[in-house]
Image (cartoon, rainbow, N blue to C red; front, side, top):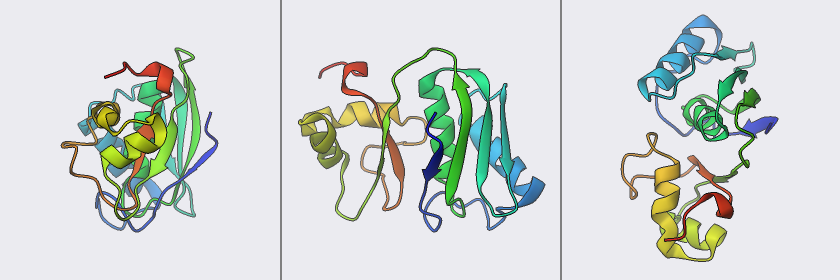
Length: 152
């Protein structure tokens, strides 16, 4: 488990400034469903402070991380509390917050020592990423453990 995962509250996909109550929960559930992330056994709640709480089981480590990122990379979400049990015991990824000047090439070089592995990071963040050049400051990406990725 990751515990609390921080996000940049003022960055992300705009679903409206609704991050309290059932309306926020419904919007986040729809976002995860629209991305096809299979949250059948995952519950998403938003507490009175606007913190998102995800709980459940029955998803892989990769899917768990993608669900956390899908709800966290939404404008108005400042943190996600991880209560998801992964079903496969996969290695946890690192999370990287994009800063000004970052490219997937630069992020790949930082974590893997080779910029040419940037497409591995892109694929690890699909379907949230649609194109390797379309990242934004404040976005949080998953960086799988080096052993979990094929060497390009």
